[in-house]
Image (cartoon, rainbow, N blue to C red; front, side, top):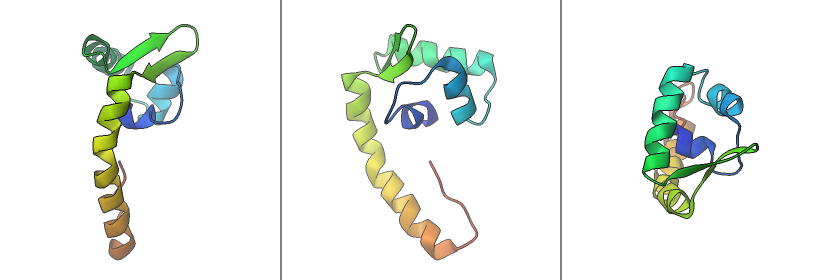
Length: 84
């Protein structure tokens, strides 16, 4: 989920994506990207980086209600952070 969320608005290089995902290990990120590429959710556009496919953008639409829910409850919980 996190990779898809981070690619929601822009193409990111591997390193940018790694940083955006909380410095996830390169091995884990490579594994996840491989699965997402095989599933045609993301594509590697060399040299600019990774971006969502049309199918990935459609999947992102499913995240929007979850994001709205998190923002609504974050406001009520104060110090607790609910981010996607």
